[in-house]
Length: 439
Image (tube, rainbow, N blue to C red; front, side, top):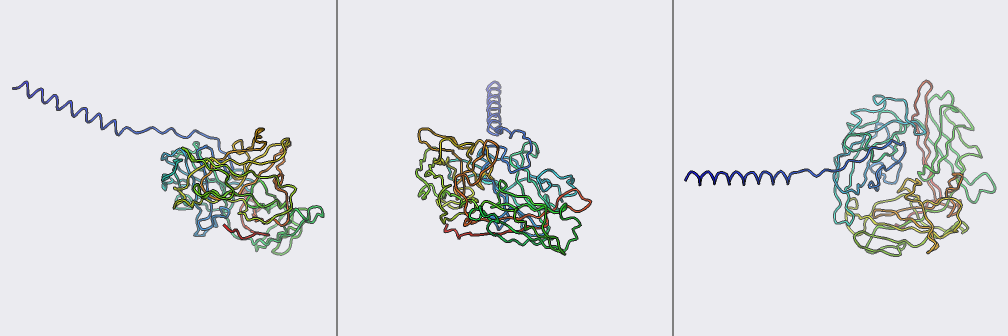
């Protein structure tokens, strides 16, 4: 009888042991490989290929530059997708920069309030998509991350609170509005450019006492928020009481370019006028109609968003997590012996020229092609040429026409006497020939 009881006890203990081991196995954590360490670059960079569709803008102004006004209640919104599809601990912080985007000499205590680090706690995984991803979103400034001086700032997002494991960096601006910017847009002062260029005259008005405007003030003027199409101006033509004018006939003379080409990718079911072919397999593949070289064509009125992109989904609600990704093929028909490199650029890739968006010539189709992984939405884009000597020709395949609709952004930086950093004291916006978009 004693042997039977002992045997029963041993069996029960063994069963309990197996159950414990099974529970431990189930609870075993799946190891996620960390993002690699990266070298910081003071630019709009995605350091990981899996990071897509990064957006940073004022909360109620999706199409505007990311500008935060000191003391204002409106915050900035950052969002992005991680195509690795898991859930990771992402943190972010900010760093003050000079007007030329080099790091300033200000310490963290001088330019930021709070801890200058916060965790991104809002995330959702995609729903019903063929390409699985995790969508992250955060809003700042807040009690943990808040700039307290004006100027250029770099937002840094990194994994596991390790600032070397960068996944993205984005530029944004902090404004102390002490300068009013007035702008006039005319045709070029040069006779041979009057049909192709747009000329800006700028006046700034302020109550500040600026002892040396030639040294203390600089203007950065961008066309359509493009860092690759920006001019910097330091020398004014007129200095008066409370007013400084920049109206030299030879400065701020921009090629107007042409209206952007655009791709409507809002639906993978119904398609759009730009889509030639849609293939749905394990992932979506979209082939757009071939673009033509328009450099010698006359101006034709079309609608665009001046280079911007918008995440939109006509197939399902909540585009943030229900919009799918597709491999999108772009193609351009132009000369086979192009001298230089052709790149596909737009707001979606910050107009940056990288191997991933460089076109290659296909001798079979006699076209230049490139593929991009894009989320459902509306995309403006164009082709630019980089010549062998490094010159970027934005109008190489589209031509340039004064009638083109463009937006211009004017940033006024001021370095006070005795200080060692640049403050952003004024922002101006000017538009010309813009047409209401029918979309």
